[in-house]
Image (cartoon, rainbow, N blue to C red; front, side, top):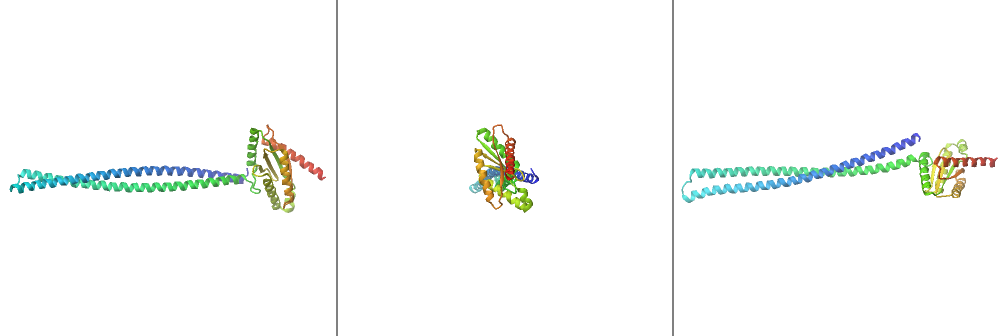
Amino acid sequence: MNAEEQRRERAATLRDTDATQRDQHAGGRDSAAEERDLLAEERDLLADERDRAADERDQVAETRDRAATAREKAETDRTVGTGELPEPTQSQTDRQAAATDRRHARADRRSGQAERRKSQSDRSLSSTQRVSGISDRVASESDRLTASADRGQSVTAQATAAQDELTGVLLRGPGLASLNELIEAARDSEEPLTLGFVDVDHLKTVNDSLGHSAGDRLLRQVAETLSATLGTNYLVFRYGGDEFVCAVPRSSLTDLRALLEQASEQLRMGSERGSISVGFAEFAVADTAETLMDRADSALYEQRRSKRWSDS
């Protein structure tokens, strides 16, 4: 893996890490929002209790006021009914009891007012907690959306890291990994798998005579033609400077030869007038990616040598 591929892979890994951290952060915000909602509910319940206590205090105060009024009225009635002043002891007792009742009533009213103030404070805190809970949930959703975007960018970065920047097909490392997967699938299913080792003819001559930009155009045209001819179900990757590998599952050597002959004909008719040489190999149960490609490479060598003989 070259420096650019390593950079892309690190970028993709960082995106994944950021996405995971944002998901964790979102989970924390959700938990905080739930705790705030619970606190708000507890505050509301406490406020309800304080309101009930204040109502009870008010009722007690009313009762004490009525008792004080009744005592004062009783004293007045005794005075009016007899035309005489009441006994000092009884009068003093009634007045003291009335004053005590009124003091208790005032204290109860103050307590009721205090309970109502506490109730208002609790309701205000409850409202604050609920607003904070909503804010946490909004922030949580924002974190989740950002995490989703990070994961999407991570997938894009990973796909980009696996692609050859010049040709757009897979690089050697990711390509070999995909080839190993095809080999394991063929071994398990006992279905055929064929491989073509493709060499771009005369690339050095093109680079030397027409410049590297012309060579780059030729490589891009070869990659595009191979990909278009083989389709999406087949594997194409760049193995080296002028070498490509094609792998076709559930297909015979005859089928692959026909496809690559079609690609070769299209290249000869294309704008760059390119041509390719191909070595073929068919998967055997004991094969690894290395042994399968070695056989295809040997076949390519023989094919190129036969070309030289025919040219001479």
